[in-house]
Image 1 (cartoon, rainbow, N blue to C red):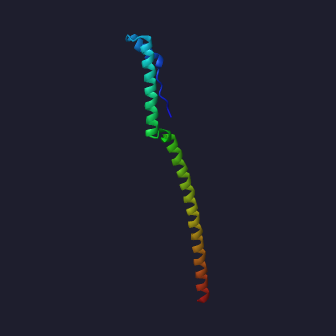
Image 2: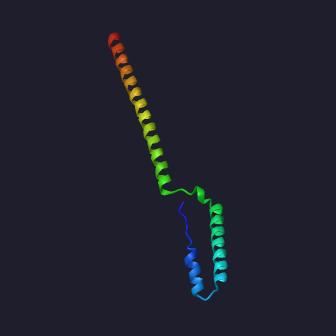
Image 3: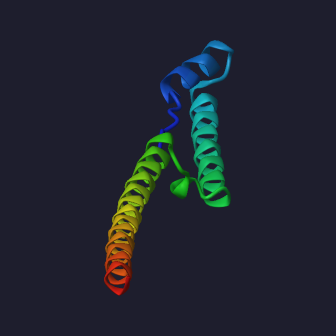
Length: 102
């Protein structure tokens, strides 16, 4: 999962530049960093972001499914060919028996 970065140094400098004292800027920076971390953790848990599907994982699952389907279709095709050959041989046997009877 992608990470979100928070540039505390830049944030601190922006606060100092806006007129906050060093202690105020440091405290606000720590609180902001904590709030961001807390919000991200809450979102991660609330939306189950650890189990979020990615395009790559979906593509992999689809490819696995395609391979299983291809295998299954080949198995079914082989069964149909065997049945076709079996029926053809039975027809030949029936025709041969009928020819002998006539």
